[in-house]
Image 1 (cartoon, rainbow, N blue to C red):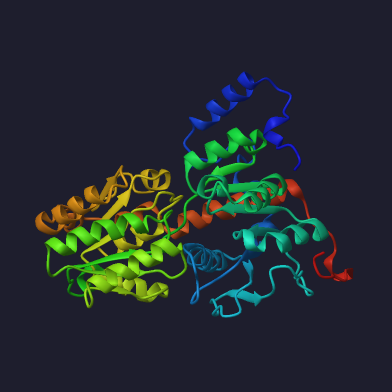
Image 2 (cartoon, rainbow, N blue to C red):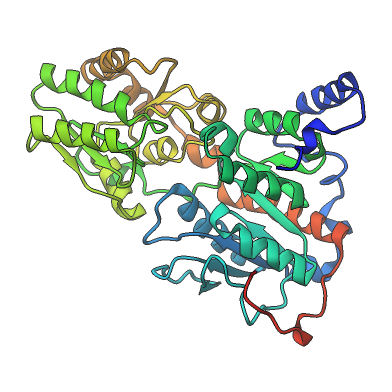
Length: 414
């Protein structure tokens, strides 16, 4: 394997560290110098009026196996509403239509034969990396990448995926991270990312008002892949104790694929408490939001969580959240009403926290007395989309136009 770039720089380590430290003490949501420094009015009016974006994502609603598909679909629609022409290329052949967005299904390893006159490429899923890299190379277009997770932190043993993500980090004109800590770690590994990266959050669309919320039962929702990284084992251990102590508590596990031991643990809990514990498999977002709206509590015991979509969706539904104190949760949920962050993965501690909330209702009371929609105020999709569009336009302005696509004949990716 080629020596990682982070091991071959010639500048002194102290100089690089001081430069990184100076940048890291900036507000992470403010544009970095010099890449995102120019005001929007300096960008070509042609681009500002009609930016053409090709977006690459592995899956999309209604059959989305992760929060990535949900976030990408929402983001593409928001960009279209702001005058962008959005082409969404996906490996999912069950993807639904999106208003204002051109959706095209294609294999993960095949270059699109009828490439539109795109201006910029935006990669979201590593599963689509081959076709995105090939498009950037053949069309000479700038490539930006949103790292929805950093594989080196999430799955340290996944060497092939780590190598692929490093390749994307190196090739991309700009990389977006979902929290400050992950960006800082990535920059320490590859200092060239310092001026080619920034932090941005997902936008969260407005939810139904609280007056329309259905009556709640004593249901606890756990959503996501059934695996150790998502804390499924912690949730099972905690709920086992809670359900032995409180007879009317029920639980819903909304997740499908995962680790065999975690799937077996959930199956054991279902067998021990029939009628009280259910496993639904993956739910469409609308179904998940309905389940959260009827729930008394949502659990997010993840050991690794770069952003924390489930806690935010639960809060939108007026449902309190117990979440692990992961890097993403500490940043995303800072100051959120109705949330308790837990610093341990000991199931007994989580069981006590669940029972305390069910008996005292402190988190629910905080949510009910909150006068503003905290999630909407923090993650208003229009503001997040405007920041993204400005970043894309600035990258495009620095890169320049690509080649004339009309005269090209494309072949499959080698």
